[in-house]
Length: 225
Ligand SMILES: Nc1ncnc2c1ncn2[C@@H]1O[C@H](COP(=O)(O)OP(=O)(O)OP(=O)(O)O)[C@@H](O)[C@H]1O
Ligand SMILES: [Mg+2]
Image 1 (spheres, rainbow, N blue to C red):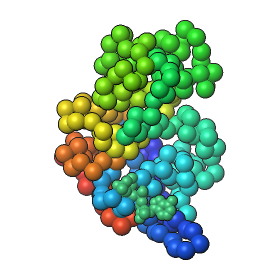
Image 2 (tube, rainbow, N blue to C red; image 1 turned 90 degrees about the vertical axis):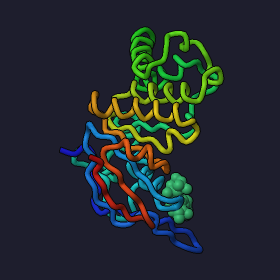
Image 3 (spheres, helix red, strand yellow; image 1 turned 60 degrees about the vertical axis):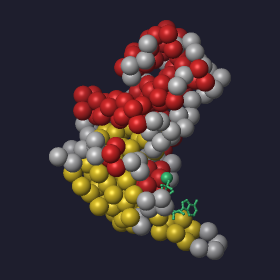
Image 4 (cartoon, rainbow, N blue to C red; image 1 turned 45 degrees about the vertical axis):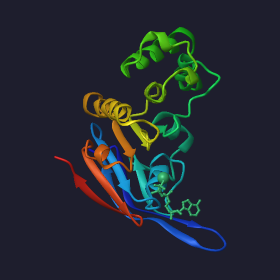
């Protein structure tokens, strides 16, 4: 049973002067417990596809279906807060909050506060392999790889079971990039998350279970064995 379904999804950017068919007739079903890589040249439609999966945009044709409901019909604010978590290339941590405060932040938005929030945040910080000594540091006091792990911990405190990452290793060296992919892969395989990453790095894509290659907005699927 899939967790997220793309039914003949297309997206066209339109303005007064032109229209761009960024995603064309994509049908696919994502499952829990798997790591997916979306690859393709610059401009092939990767980020546009991810934005629709994240509920930031709705398809101009077709539908993205989560739990029997199209994202065009469900409450997308709730969907973004509870069902999908997004990780970015530049980490997007709050610079003026400590590591622990960064990770508890999404919990506070859902009304979980104080000791309980801290307890859950500390658990997730440990899950991504960071020591307790980072709790009170600010993001600028961490390496890029450590900052990305904090971003993953922050994604994990929510109830989201879909983790989306646009070039999560883009600002990291090979070793740190591989560590991040290792963590994301374990979250999929051991904890049953559905993890979808965009990458231009084929050596990273090869570590996924399924590769979705994009070309001019169309997708070709390849299972990695
Ligand atoms: N706001 C916009 N208005 C018009 N066209 C857009 C807009 N955003 C993206 N596009 C176009 O849609 C197509 C797909 O863009 P998209 O950002 O999804 O590509 P991408 O595969 O993520 O590229 P990259 O690897 O460079 O991040 C491109 O032709 C792009 O120029
Ligand atoms: Mg992009």
